[in-house]
Amino acid sequence: MKTIEEIQMFLKNEPLLEWRLSCARTHSQILQETTGKTLFFGVGLCSDKEPSQGIPFDILMFFLEAERLKKFLSLGKVIVLIADDHALTNSFMTSQQVTTLTLRTRTLFQSIVKNLHLDLFEIRKASEMISKNKLDQELLNKTETTNQYLIHEIRDVIWMIQRDNLAIKLGWAIDGNIDPAGHDERFFDTSMREFLPHPIVSIFTKAGRTFDKHRQKVSPYISLQREHRLLLSPDEDVSFKIHEADALWNDTDWGGTRKHLGNIIRAFESLFGHMPGLSFEQKLNHIIVTSTKGVGI
Image 1 (tube, rainbow, N blue to C red):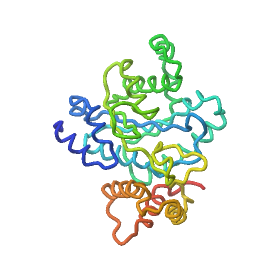
Image 2 (image 1 turned 60 degrees about the vertical axis):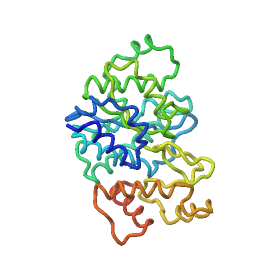
Image 3 (image 1 turned 180 degrees about the vertical axis):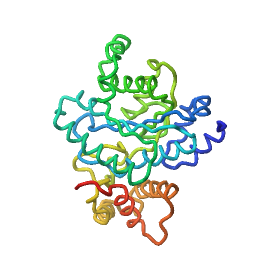
Image 4 (image 1 turned 90 degrees about the horizontal axis):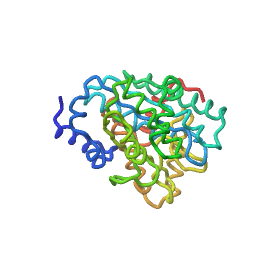
């Protein structure tokens, strides 16, 4: 069993986590009794305005931090939940789009888990899970919200608490403030508390990053049209994206995005070994090639 001091020090030493926010949202007893329990993170397929056009490199934050937390807290399982039926709560999404994006996402995630040897990771579609429960009307009766996406989120978590021994939700936040700002995952986590049969712990990664000066901090799992951003794709041209970033910024750190990508590299190396002799660009390319091996272009 870890002490609360050990847990807080672990969170503090993870540069990809919003550690102050995560520490503020921890329940010490839950985190001290996690052996064999479950962590999950959810991945959306669209923003509130348009479908995702690709899967960002930043998604690796979730997989890498989930693996580190699994080992540190002796967790029994990690569920990677693809929010397929959630996407249909947006009027601009069609069933065919959701099917296509879900297949693309699931295929990539299965490759990540296989290629990185992430044991005890389960890739799950929300629709596979939700079809088996009867929580919809109960939730509608308890809450006045008209936010159907939120209702789906609450329903997912209740389902996993009841059936998967869920203890931890890994999400992301746009910054480290305690109060929600917009609709990052602080909003969902705060809104669902009163409906859960018992508390779970919320741990937050940093936001994803683009190379765009006016929209740097974004979702780690959704890439939109016209974004300048590194993607997790077997045909990604890392060299081109780095030159693109240099052209957009008169700043070698690209407004902090280079440091952010470097932290993902370090998290990867902490789990799978250092990559001596490789440049920053070569390390990014190695991680993408390794993670996406076997994925069709």
